[in-house]
Structure formats: structure tokens, C-alpha cells
Length: 128
Length: 499
Image (cartoon, rainbow over all chains, first blue to last red; front, side):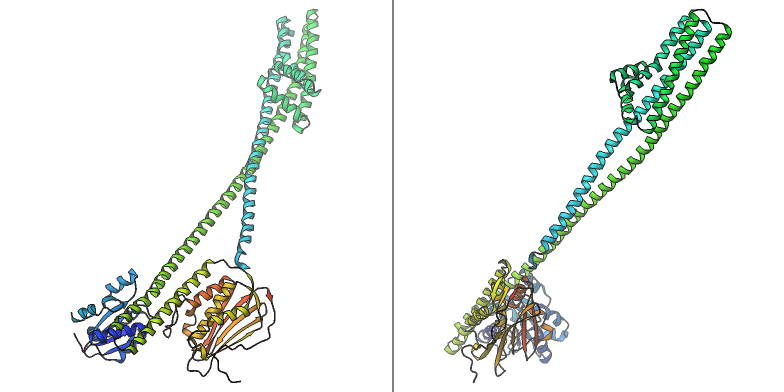
């Protein structure tokens, strides 16, 4: 478990933010957790916070102003050095097949997980 | 009410083109019938003229042969020639009998017998009779008949001459010089007859040629009319087909659009319905490994919040469905009582206690749909309350109704958070939410706008971020029954405004 990794939760739903961060804290003992509400805020956060070791982004799909996929397009333009240190995991309550396919086939998305955050799966993905 | 105003116009237009199409069809049929009738009679006329020409030919031949035989009789005094003369003269005499019978309008039987003697084919008899009876007063026939009459007189003279010769021959009175004189006399009559015969032929020939020309041009004209009418009819039909194809294409497009809307709706709805459930599952999970009751309480509040949102979403969907499906009923609606009801429903909304709501309703009764008015006011007032600015000392909502020229306006104004200029257009979109909005489904304003448009009204918004927002419902062209209500400021329970 890379305890030095930063975690960024991108989700407009306050309740889900609380749920996800509590799960990370209590079950995986993670302390460095940041939360933003939209894709735009996530981009701003990335620019403002340099990554030393690694970054794991838990990205929701449906958000106002800039949704998960739109964020990924903008993320694509970012520095390769940043991208090398970052793992993106999409976290959503969607049942839409198109969304699911799009997320799973996306080059920057490691995995699509269903809410509420399945911590065991997450830890497996991170340690691999 | 404009809802069905397109239909009567459309029907009128349809019946107009339908009449035109029927007129064209009628034109084609009547012109064709006319063509057939004209052709029948014209061809009959030409046929009859041809029969007369044939008849004239027999007449001339008979007369010429008779003259020839008479000359031979004079020369040879052989009674065989006398018999032949009489025999051949029967031909023009027969025609003469027919002419007299037809002129005097005696029985057709006599005419037929005459024509038969004149060596006219029996099948032509009805034609000869028909032409005579129907055209005897018309130029060419009239002339031909009078020429015929004169010719017949000459034939009579020839007959008399014959008789004279016969008696002379029988009495053996004939000398050489006498024979010469007689020959000359025979010749004389024959020459005169030739002139008449020619005139008769010419008259008929000219008539036939003229009729020919008329026939051709009439046929041409009527055929062109028929073709033009048929073309017009075909064009009308093609037009109709194209029109219905266009309508079909439009309907298909509408259907595709509806399907797409439905797809996107189902997508959004299913996500928004599921989201609170996943939130709740997460909350339950983290509550399990929590032992602090204060944290539990916090989680229970969050669960309540999620369920409230889901509840609200479901009623929004139902409202959306009602708006779409229930027929609009136009009736006098009281703005005052609808507003009161709506405010009552919102009495227990969060943050309501610090809110000051005033109403200035100059116009009470308006022709509208009660369900839709309720939906619109509900949404506007909900939003005003949801987006009120807690940073301001007093949060105010003012509801007004007033009339302007031929319109009635209902406005809901607040001093809340306001809307950014770039989002002002999008707020009416389906499922549009802003980020400081864990409070809505995104359907409210969409539904309100749809409801307004169903009633030929418009929903407009002006806003300044940080200052406030005003929504205006503009109802036009309606029968306004103005029960002027004295402007009153209504304050609801919980407001704390010192006098």
C-alpha cells in the first residue's frame, strides 16, 4: 500500500464525498485526501498541487459544468510527467452501458468502480 | 387560443385544393366526352358528304350514259338504245325523287327508294337522309341542294327531249339534218348538266375540306385541354404525395427527436434515482464501523437529506409527466388563491423562517390552466427559497401580478444568489444543475417553461449574481377579468420584521 499517495475525490455530491473519504480513512488508513466538486475545480487543483510521489483520482462521471469525461479530455493535455504519476479510477452510480463501456475503454482510466466505493477492490488495484 | 388554430386553416386549404382537383377531373371527363361527341358528328358529316359525292358520281355517270344512249338511238333508231336510255336515266331521276321527298318532308321510305334507284349503297341511305334533313339550311348543303334542283330540271328536259325523239323515231320522222339538230340539243343539255354536276361536286368538296380543318383544330384544342388538365391533375396528385411525404419525414424527425429525448431522459432519470441509493448504502457502511453517536447522528442527517432529494426528484418527475400528458384546460384561474396555496406548501422548507415574502397582486383572475399555473408558481417560489442568499440580512421574495397592454405578467423576484450571465440560457435545460446545487433535480425550470409554452405564454429571467433574480411569466391574449385587489404585503409566520 503506497501510503505516500495523495488522493483526490472529484464528485459534486457532498454526501458521496463524505462516504468515500470516510471509507478511505477508516478502511485503508489513508490520510492525504482532497475533495473538489467539478472537473474544473479538479484541473485547478492539479495545477496548484505538484505531485511528488503519486496521485490517485477518484472521478465521478456526472457533474455540473464539466463532467468526468470532459475532465479526462482536458487531463489528456496535461504534462506527461504528471500523468505518469497519476492513476485515475472512475467511481459512479451509473447503469448506462455506453458510459460503462466508454469508461472502461478509456486510455487514462484504470478501472470503473461502482458506488459506494468498494475498498477491497480499490486496494487490489492500487497495490498492483 | 392558438393551440388548434392551425387546423381550421389547414382544412380550408385542403378543401380548396380538393375542389380544384375535382374541377380538373371534371374538366378532363367533360372535354373527353365533348371530343367524342364532336368527333362522332363530324365524322358522320364527312361520311355523308362522301356518300353524296359517291351519289353524284352515279348521278353523272347515269346521266352521261343516258345521253350517250339517246344519241345512239337518234343515230341508229334502235329501240334497244331507247330502253337503255330510259334505264340509265332512272339513276338521276331516282335521286330527284329522293330530293323532292326530303324537301317536302314526306316519308323516308320514298327517299330511300329514290336513293336506291340512284345507285346509292343502302348503307349510305341513312347518311344521305341525315345530312339533308339536318343541314338543308346550312350554306354548303343549301347551295348543293339548289344546284341539284337545277340539275334535276335539266334531267327533266333531257327526259322530255328523249320522249320527243322517241315519238319522232317511232313515227319515222327523223331526217339527217333533224338528227344533227337533235344531237346538238342532247349535247347542249349534257354540257349544262356537266356544269351543274361540277358545281355540286365542288360545293361538297369544299364543305368536306372545311369540316376537315375544323375537325383537326377542334381535336387539337380539346386534346390540348385534356392533356393540360391531366397534367394539372397529375401535378396536384404529385404535390399531394410530396406533401404527405414531407409530413411523414417531419413526423419521423419528430419521433426520432422524441426518442432521443426519451433516451436522454431515461439516462438522467435513472442515474438521479439511483444516486441517493448508492449514497445511502455508503452511509450505512461507514456507520457500521462508527461507534460515536455524534457521528451516527451526522450520518442519519445525511441519509435524511439524500432521501429528501430523491423524494423531491420523484415528485418532479410526476409533475413533468402531468404537464406533458394532461390536456390543457383553459378557465378563469385565481392568481391570488394559487399563490396562497403555493406559499402554504412551502411553509416548512428549510430556511423559510428567516424569509420575508410579499405579494402585490393587482390582477387576480386570468384565463389559464390551473394545474400549470400551480406548477409554474411552485417552481419559481421553490427556487427563490432554495437560492436565497444567507449572507444577506433579510432574504426577500416579492410576488407581483400586473397587466401591461394586452398581457398579464406574474413576477417572482428575490435578492438571492443570482445566476451567472453564461448560465442564464441554460437554466431552462432539462437536468441542468449548478454546482452549488445539491438541492435540485434540474427539472423544475424546464417543466415550468414547458407548462408556460403549452399556454402560449413565456417565462423570462433577469439576474445579477450576488444581487438577485427575477422570473416573469407573461400571459398574452387572454380575457382578463380584472378584480383589482388592493396591494397588500403578506408576511408569513416566522418573519421577524419590527414594525
